[in-house]
Length: 283
Image (cartoon, rainbow, N blue to C red):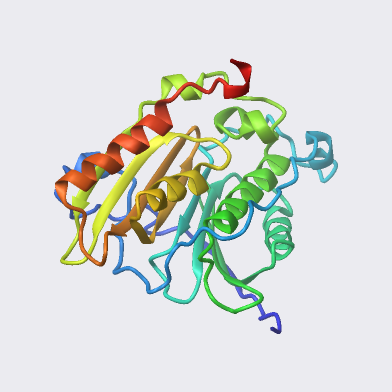
C-alpha cells in the first residue's frame, strides 16, 4: 500500500482536557477520562507474539542537538491510545515537553513497526507539547486491532520519549526498563489497583482498570479478559506517569456482563495485578 502524505498542524492548545464521562460513577472519579464513542466494529484480538522494542538511547545522543535535559520542568508524561474516536484509524495522543526532532523520530519509529501516520497535529501550552497522531497499518490501511501491536506502539513512543527527555524516565514506570533514571517509588506496591464494571447499553459493558504501569500490561489485560471468553470490542489505554488506565468495551455473547461474570472478571484482574512478582522458577 502506498504511503499517504502526512499533514502536521501546529496550533495553540484548546480543549485539551478530556470531557467528563456521563456514566454512573461520580464525575470526580472519572477525572482525566474522555467519554467513549460507540464502539467500532473492529475487535481487539490476540494474534502474534509481542513486537520487540529497542531500549532508549543514552541521554548524550539527545544533548548533541542542543537540548538540555535538566533546565526545565518536565510535565507528567502521557501516552493515550484511543480506539474509539475514529472508525478508520487508531488515535494516539502524546504529552511531554518540546524537544527538537522528537516528532519526526516518533513517526519514523512507528513506520518501522509497519504503521503509517496518516495525520498529525501538534499544539503547545503551559503544560507542554501535545501531539495527536492518526495511525493505520501499512499492510491494510486500517486501524490496529492486535493488542501486541498496540503495546509495541506504546512502548516505542515511550522509548522515543525518553531518548529526548531522559529526565522524564524517573516519572515513568517504564523508566526502569528504558530510561537512565528509574522511578524512585516502588510502583508495584505504592499504586493502588481499581477495577470497576458498568452497564453501557443493551449489548456491552464498560470495564475500567487503573493500576501500576509496566511493559506488556495492555496485552496481559486483554489476555485475561479473553481467557474468560469475554469479548473486547474496543477501548482506550492511557499511560500517565507511573499509572496505567484502561477502558474496554466488553461483552459476553453479544450481551452485557451479568453480575456474576463481572465478579469473576474483577477477581481475575485483581489477582493478576496484585500477585507477587517473584518468578515461579525461584521456588
